Length: 253
Length: 252
Image (spheres, helix red, strand yellow):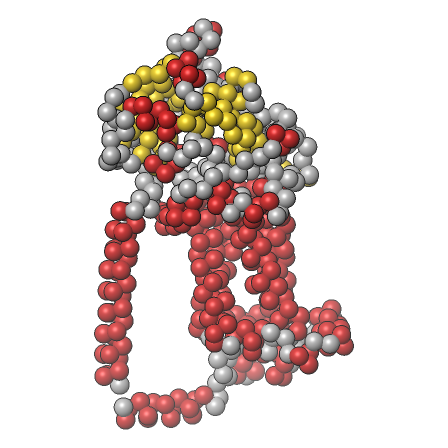
């Protein structure tokens, strides 16, 4: 016990030079697990999609029905008329398996993240916008700063700004639930148990179409997210999400 | 310092041992309750098992959605080329009067049924969705005998766990657990939208499992085998689908 007291005092001496932990270990682990799942889901989702790159609205749809829209790409099945003279290699089998396995990991990670963020205050402190910031002037300032690609400095740089908070909340509480819901609404077995989940959406093919658009929004989020990291300082942000500390001392030196 | 790390080591070790034995117990219980699919091994086995176990717990007695007549698709899409094997064409020429469905395995009275026999049993219909894993789907009215009716006729033995079914087309076979085999919407289907079941859609006889994707509804079936173990069939993964990289359980 005496040893640990010595250790903690020396840690305190070092801590004055080191930044406080920016991301808790829990946030870092769930962040990278979700990242891994997202890319697995994206790649396999595209593979599944190219076996039938046509979209419909309502309950049913196939090549004998009018499509809502078609993607101008070749298909991996010869039964789909795409106008291209060739058929892409079929990767649907393992893609489906990996898609669902990644979905399980992502959903369980997400549940763990949301529950613990509610309990430990991460949601309230770091993500929920301050009352003071919820005004039009604060909102327009935040947008103006973003449009000018002006990196923040000082203490503001390391606290989530208003747009960032709203975006993260939107991804966590709108896009994620929607993508899970529309994914499940394509399952004939799940729909036999919860038919209301699919009829509310207008049908199984509507669910598939919405699933496609929501994944588009998620991809858009990831692209913007990575762009913002590059603008704010790729190295320090990555270090913060990997080690927990941005370690700005080194960068300043 | 060393005290703390020893305690940590002990708790971590104990935690891991408890976790590992917990997993073994969960696995045993899941096996007993029929929550482990035959294709639970391999890289994606964990996902397949979670999906099957979760859906089995949620959907044992649920009914596939049925639709009003107005929702029936104008042209039920016949996927792929119609089956054109010479022996099949001869049967087709003779209007399938010689078509037989044999039932064997763990049954009290193995038997063979003609189409007329199957049609003489109580006929049921449902207007349901047939969804392909590729993404397309159609809604049609399916007519047939309930699989559970035919299984009652032959007398399934109490230890039976799966019904394996084979297409006349070589290499096409699949299997259902008892929850799906005994489900009232699982048909030996011989009718589509009020007429005969066209060959392109699986005629003269097709398994119809509306709570799973289209590939479980194997076309042109000629044989059923009731069993308690899927190891003896093909590569032991439960159906032809996993041998091609697709899931045995196709509820999603």
